[in-house]
Every structure is written in structure tokens, then in C-alpha cells.
View 1 (spheres, rainbow, N blue to C red):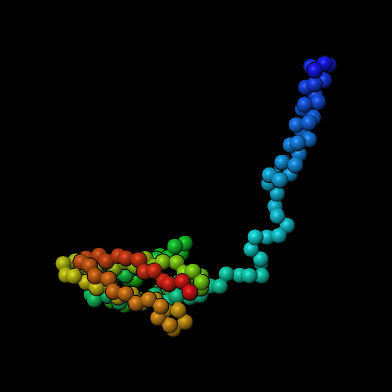
View 2: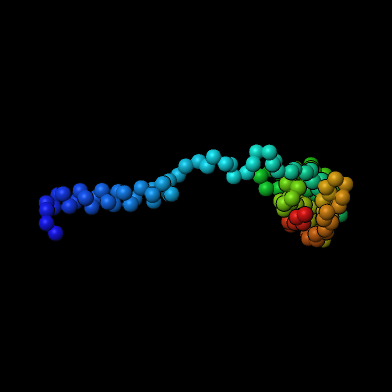
Length: 139
């Protein structure tokens, strides 16, 4: 190949730049004019009522991800809490019971209701402290 090495360098650089333009246009970060989730479609939220009943006096707690923990006063046997979650894919509920009498086996009954319909009803057994997770079935 004849010619100046500087001229050859400029021609090769220009050819590479012309080839790089379509690749840059495909891979650059830009915001899409169409949003990923339409604004008109809002997530359906529903209130879930959690009812805790213990076999003895205890401090009862219920907790859902990204929501504040709800606790009872110490020495109660019944406790209710309401959590607002997705109606289609509800979160799991963590339940705790710290019993006053730590020597006897104790039970914690958990019921989860949505619009008056019982979705989950479970009983957990333990001595002193009972803690478990209640999974709500997705509809």
C-alpha cells in the first residue's frame, strides 16, 4: 500500500467511526417514550386482617415486609392487626408470641382474613417463644 502513513491512519479511523455510529445508537442509554408500566393501571391493594390468639398471656407481634411491625402490650391473649398489601401477590406475614409462662408448651393461633373471608388458619406450638411465617396463597 502506498501513501503516507498518516493519511492511512486517518482513513482507517474514519472507517471505524462510521461503523461505530450504528452500534452506539443501539446501545446508548435513553429513556423510552413509552413507560414500562402504564400509569392508568394501579396496583390493587387490599386490607388483610391478621388475628392472633394465644393459649396463655403473651406479647404478640405481626410483621410484613416494608411495613412497620405491629405489637401488642405485654400480657394479652388476643390481638388483631391490619396490613395493606397487593391483592394479587400478598407478602408473607411473620408472627411472634413471647409467652409470660416460659415453662409450659403454648399455642399461637393465626387467622388471616381478606374482606371477611378466611384465607389462612394455622396453629403454631412452642415453649416460651413461638415464631413462624404465614404464607398467604396468591389468587
